[in-house]
Amino acid sequence: MASLPAKMTGAVLPGNSSVELQSYDLPVPGHGEVLIRVKSSTICGSDIRAIYREHLGKGPEGYQGVIAGHEPCGQIVREGPGCRRFKEGDRVIVYHISGCGLCNDCRRGYMISCTSVRYRRAYGWQRDGGMADYMLAEEKDLVLLPDSLSYSDGAQVACGFGTVYEGLQKIGISGDDAVLVTGLGPVGLATAMLARAMGSTLIIGTDIAPGRLSLAKKLGLCDQVFPSGPDNVEQVRALTGGDGVEKAIDCSANAQARL
Picture 1 (cartoon, rainbow, N blue to C red):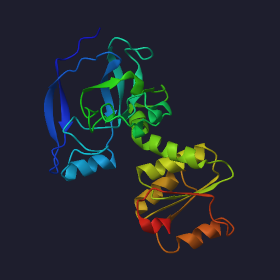
Picture 2: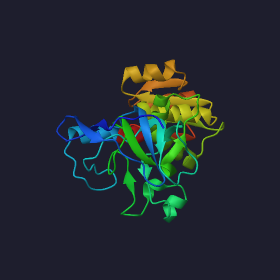
Picture 3: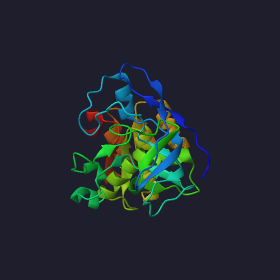
């Protein structure tokens, strides 16, 4: 077993537009848990809210003063007893919602909808997350990171890409579909990338930010992009022979984008 430090540093969010770094004892994995050396941990829009606004500690995203970060990726450095799949040295993504594993929603794969008040705890919200040198995670919450992906790739998958993928799976995307993505931030770009991988041959993007439009084109994620505005409907119709798109995904959270 590799030698590990006795202490680690973690980031907490006091809710006053600042981040505090605090010292913690290195956690010890219990039954079915692993200790992960965090290699990358990205920031979600919900984290921004908790940084700049007072948090009340209630609800699924109620921040409770724990180590922040629910988009972590890293390498297992210790295993607790009872682990059945993952082992020391494995590269893993941590799925951010840890459910009870036994309720109807968890057994169907929707841990985010876990109905257990006691056991549903999100990393970085109700239990310590990934903005630290090390973190504890339950083995059942891990996804193996392929060697072809970097740790930062994996951190992006942990929340952002996973959220998009579930949505696209529900509506179904194929080569028969022209797709419109409104809002080309990180989630919108992930939507375009996954829609392409699922077979769409025409992807159109809109955004108010020229830099995001340029990036979507540069990366080859969108076939055509337009600045958000009142002409978008006619622009989309012109590209699709007057038919419009089969699937439209709003990633802007702006009501005007859905008109």
